[in-house]
Image (cartoon, rainbow, N blue to C red; front, side, top):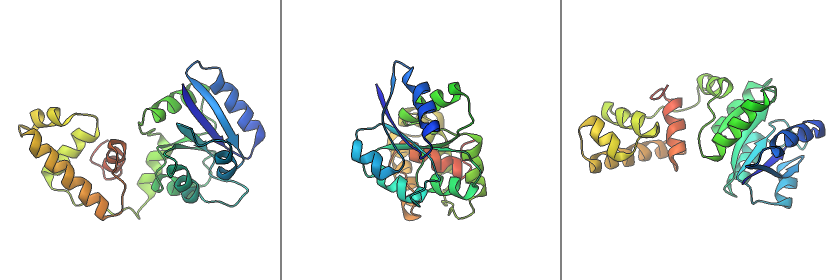
Length: 207
């Protein structure tokens, strides 16, 4: 069972979204709150949080994502999308994806399941936020590192990458280590394979 939290200060939206989710046998809305503090007071045992980016408590997306990430909770930004700067802030702070509240129930449920599996929810809004964010420092990868990143971040195993590029598995591992070090040096999160995928998309190594 995937345990979901919703942070939104619009009760009607919370009720409607909760109803859609709770009709699924594999999903459960375990807690809701008008802000992150209220949600975490109820429980931190959550797999994913749908986070509204505009809350009346005055908190920022970066602050809220930081608090949730401290508890190991993945975050899907759930927004009306009218303020692009907030979407960019959420993406920079580590949101696993961005979803408009106007999307269909089918799209919502698909995005939740993908995010809970650790997959990036690469919607148009998410991609646009990256395209417009000129503040992201690009990693200076070698051509071979770029090839390794494109394959590895897209889901290939080290063994598969090695076979594809006619190099050893140890060489692939060394390249991945160097790639991570370069991104860490720029202050960009690559602790997980999902993080590597997001960085690869941001820098144009993966479509």
